[in-house]
Amino acid sequence: MESYYRYSVSAFILLYLCVFTIPVVFLNFDHFNPFMNFSNSTLESPGPKFELQRLIVSTSDQIRAVGTSGSTYDHQQLNRNTTLIRETKKLSKEQMLEQGLARARASIRSAAIARIVRTTSFMNDNDVLVGDVYRNPSTFYQSYVEMERRFKVYVYTEGELPIVHDGPCKNIYTIEGRFIHEMEHGAKRFRTNDPQRAHVYFMPFSVAWMVKYIYTPLSFDITPLKHFVSDYVKVISTKYPFWNRTHGADHFMLACHDWGPHASQGNSLLYNNSIRVLCNANISEGFNPQKDVSLPEISLIGGYLSPKLIHPPPPNASRPYSAFFAGGLHGPIRPYLLQHWKGRDNDMQVYEYLPKNKDYYSYMLESKFCLCPSGYEVASPRIVEAIYSGCVPVILSDNYVLPFSDVLRWEAFSVQVETTKIPRLKEILSAIPEEKYRKLQEGVIVVRRHFMLNQPPKRFDVFHMILHSIWVRRINARPNSNRS
Image (tube, rainbow, N blue to C red):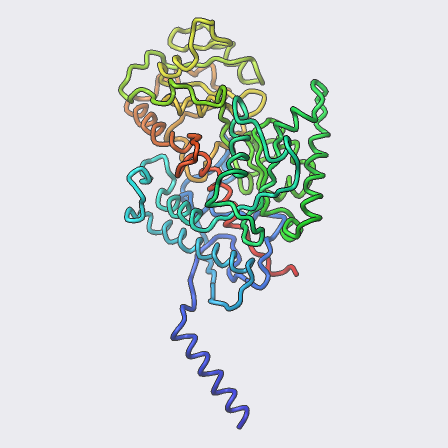
């Protein structure tokens, strides 16, 4: 009789759960654990962990580095795996975070299938994402909304000024200091003081300031930088459980200095597992776009955008020059460019250094195409300067993963030319039909907002685009049900 009573009660409970709860939400992901185990939601590490790019990028597109052949990072068609999420009781904070991410993935996946932007959710007309510059605007928008709704970042308080909690906010490494400053003193929507509520953990050291304060000039010995990073990771991993819980896979650093990748070698888990947000996004030097983030290099002289670039001329304004470049002989590509085009053609305004009576930004505003060759490292501030000036960027680089490639189609607002074809540069640019050029320039105008540094930050500007790129990597961190 007692066993029969237990059986009846169990049957009643099962019937109640089936009728009165929302039992399941289905998701489709490629290479994602088909059955999430919320009882053990640590991140699997090492190995591939971040796959939301497969949802944001249309299946026919590829994300690969500029100047590389083949499809190293092809985005193949999604497998129809199924993730089952059940309502659970008394979840820990960590389990609740993972459940929230699972719901975000479901929402994003739904938008990816529908490919329709729900305009009723827009706050104003400026939030509309339209045009060929986006791989999938509906998916991007839904992912962005989910980021705003859920994403929380914990900023470690360990470390002392000036190397930690500060960075350069002007000139060549502007973006490094501005991001650190915003995370330290702003970003109220995204920052949490409770590390248990965080999706990711930010290590706010500045590689640019390491070079300034602990590097011996002209020594070319970057060992002190590696030691600093090693010591910092040792401190936070000893004091807190979060680094050891995921082997650093939900931690990130940000650096615009050329030596950012080298500094990250101070800790092998940071180098191999963590999210490294780097201007020097060179796949030949270990940059991994599946987990790392390409950071746009932004140079603001004196910390401010030139007044000439605040309001660029309209698309129909006269641009008498076909192309423009001015810069020093840094790295292997620029000497090759100057060898073939410096002073050779009035239509191709190519200088090593501009004469004092010439204005750099005026040339950009008067040129249809702005040449953006790499220097010693792959990134160049000229790309963003070109976008600011309404000039179509011409990317001359090898092995460079362009910023925000998860959501932006660079081919819709830039021209990418293999460095070996620099001698044919004018021929290549002249062959672009006027209609296509106008389309490219329209794309430049559309994406400008995504590269703007605003104070305070605005929706979809460069600060939020960087955060979204980090969110993309984190949202696909795969829970490992096999580790205790």
